[in-house]
Amino acid sequence: MISTVLTGPQKAAVLLVQLGKDKTSQVLRSMRESEVEELLNEIARLQGLDEGLVDSVLEEFHVLAKARRFAGQGGVAFAREVLEASMGPEQAQEILSRMHASLVELPFEFLRRADARQVLSFLQDEHPQTVALVLAHMPADQAAIVLAGMPEGLQADVAHRVAIMESISPEVIRSVGEALERKLSSLLVSSDFAVTGGLRPLIDIINNADRTTERLILEGLERRDPVLAEAVRSHMFVFEDIATLDDRSIQLVLRQVDGKQLATALKGVRPDVRQKIISNVSERAAVTLNEEVEALGPVLLKTVEAAQNLVVQAIRSLEDSGEIVLARGERDEYVD
Image 1 (cartoon, rainbow, N blue to C red):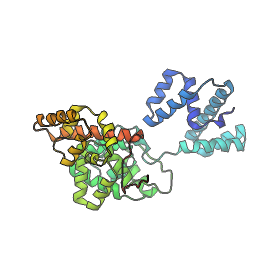
Image 2: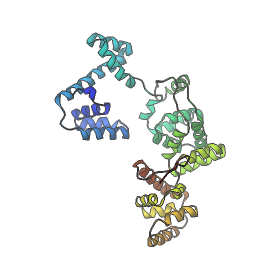
Image 3: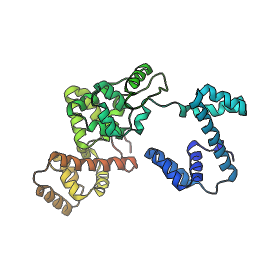
């Protein structure tokens, strides 16, 4: 077997195994969680590696590493000349094609390596449109932290701009990147037009935000653009939507939630939401739950929202694992 039979992640798994656990741990710490999970799955599947296969993967890595170093010193043209001189034009082209994607960064790729709190400080004096452009390129979990740290009025303004943002030309992105370069880093644009905004990135950001930030953003959007606010709500899941789940799904959710947290989450909710949950526990548990809710007395809104956020996170986790299905946007139709 030769290394070209393997996928990229499989080759990476072979390489990491050869590096040993200490160096592999260092490499994995610099990667995103989804990438780490993919690589660990591949490593777990490796069995009885053929010596020739390992040598082939290591040789390929060595050649690609050298090519990348040459490109860094003298550009892709220089790398091509060196590779063609050492191994011929056909193999040189094959190697350059494989490494091309890794040589070109996505817009604002440097933000993936930046701390969200630093980005928040960095963006505080920027125009809301610039902030929206930056957040649209950030991973949703980081963007949620940044958005949560902004003043309430700015949150809604930026969220609105992200949602209505259309494809941005590379010249605009490059211009913004050059203006920000002195503070963080430079950027490279990899395509003629980059799809940066719209509902999807905004919804991802909100879904990764805490419940208070979620509420403030939605309320702000409602005041600024009611149609857009409704479109956002229809594509995301908020705590009150638990009333739309079927009984089986609600019972699965309740198994994931602590009783005291559930009681706090139910404080002040709509009667139909509370009743939907109460109806999915035993009669004895329902009495206990109602007593716990009443015994809480006045509760800070942020405390209630934090508890509701835990329930929503449990719901989203069950959705990710395929155990429940959430209706988003237009309701899906089912047949018996």
